[in-house]
Length: 458
Image (tube, rainbow, N blue to C red; front, side):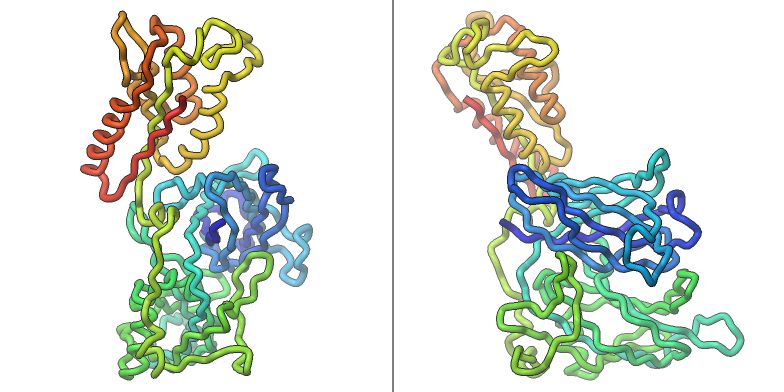
């Protein structure tokens, strides 16, 4: 069982949202027969004010077992009554269904779907998943700005600045920034002093204190059209160094000063309020329940990035491309495929045919593996059969070198049994393994990181 973190954003949902444009999302984990879990609501995001392209800060933690399907629904609402938490008092504008394994198998661990509401459809909802790095620390950060640019357009007014912290998410299509924290705004000032920010270290940098983060400052507006006042890139270790050296970050014009920065540890348990799977940082108590680590200690030991053995999800997140092949045994030990009850017998019933053992194996295993093959182009091979009296231990099944998805693999398999092949023997995997090895070498020339999987059914 692996813990993964789900984050959400949407773009251009104005076609399905009202003029108020205050969207929030509700995530519901659907029932699973294999795990016995019932449908339950994981929680909801914060309300994004006056925008049709929200990038929600709140994330959701799920328990995921590789190979087990786990579906969830994301419902998007437009807040109609901010004083009433009842969803029936809000306006539902659309929903999308996702499967965790399908997201992990997509390029960059991101999957986009069109938001649908009845007969209307508009905008895209992006769901991304990363593995939780199990770093239980919390970043405590206090910032202040000095002589920031005044972007207020009124005659005597000043800006109402707030800041966002964005985490870098490495993807095969290019690194992206994911907003993980948003501060309150300070009214009418270009010299703001913001309250303490508390962010999970796991969420912000997956435990790597040298991973880049971005801090951006904006001028708040009730209309939602926030004006940028500057930004800079750093890391948690960069913030610690800034505090130790007294060096500020330039926004041009203006500077951002680190007033205080700490990493908080609480006896192996993150000081986070986890409500229905939603990470909601809250102010910790600095009593005997926890340990507060100061900057002097951090600079000596606590700022070392923890190391761990990479997991399957780590490789997917790092851009590893999986390439699946299927090999099928056509040796004579399977029995005459024309006789009912043998392993290769194809049920002639056109309406509800019963699967033979090979069809059952393909239908059970290939859908699991193909999720992690982003293009779903799967070579289907056969071995142990004779064509024209010549034994073939690595031949193409189907009319094309590659089949598309599980349905394509089944179609390729079914088509072979309609040809003139003769089941023969003996069983030999050597040519199949050579094919897989050659393909692995070829794909590694084109891709920086790839792994080839061959499913042999016999």
